[in-house]
Length: 192
Ligand code: HEC
Ligand code: HEC
Ligand code: HEC
Image 1 (tube, protein in one colour):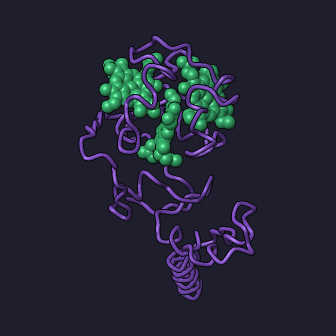
Image 2 (cartoon, rainbow, N blue to C red; image 1 turned 30 degrees about the vertical axis):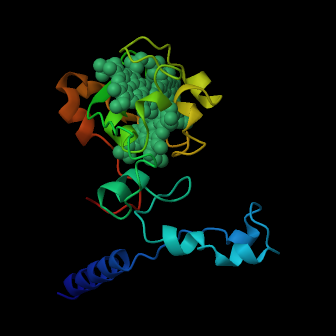
């Protein structure tokens, strides 16, 4: 009996810990980020990153925000155009890349990209808009080409292998539904 209540206590404690998980994210204050002039009075007028970013979906990499999740949860609503005549195009498909490699398959979601970017940001300069028409190469990506033009610069860093290589090989045949279900959650990120 005593062992049982001890287990219950331990479980309750673990649950409380999980519930009260502290936000361990840290952002440098503007005056110390090496970009803003600490002597300028204008720097003090700006919102501190911590104030804004701590409210968004947490990540453990890059600038510690899951941007696509924050957008889809409605935590942010970025303005998509400046010029009212601009046509906004969102493409809702997913392309599986690297079908013959040794690492898990790379899932490229057009939607998560076209929510922020225009087609012309990628086509036809970085990528030709034809399946299989690009010689994708991890070495080039690591050197800042192809996906690496943005990933590691303005989007989540290349150390997050599993976010691109997200589809286990055994599930290739199951198509896009499998691809979608296979996106790994970041450790520490809350469930959907
Ligand atoms: C931004 C997305 C992205 C990230 C992050 C990324 N990769 Fe890749 N990776 C790709 C793409 C795209 C290819 C090219 C697919 C092809 O060859 O057709 C690739 C190809 C590869 C290949 C060669 C093909 C294979 O499966 O054998 C290896 C190995 C590889 N990546 C390893 C890694 C490792 C290790 C990491 C983490 C350090 C990583 N990648 C992170 C997108 C990514
Ligand atoms: C972030 C970069 C990026 C953006 C933005 C982007 N694409 Fe793509 N697109 C790709 C990549 C990568 C491929 C895969 C090419 C390959 O397989 O070699 C691709 C493939 C395609 C293809 C051929 C495969 C298919 O699905 O039929 C078409 C068509 C296409 N894109 C249209 C568009 C349109 C239209 C937009 C804007 C609404 C757009 N893309 C925005 C990166 C992008
Ligand atoms: C022109 C810039 C650009 C290029 C090129 C680019 N991406 Fe991205 N990608 C982004 C941005 C911006 C985001 C959203 C911010 C983030 O998640 O960090 C994103 C997000 C993603 C996501 C996360 C989607 C989600 O639901 O969280 C994946 C996966 C991804 N990219 C894969 C790729 C792969 C694979 C390539 C190359 C074939 C690529 N990206 C090329 C800009 C780019």
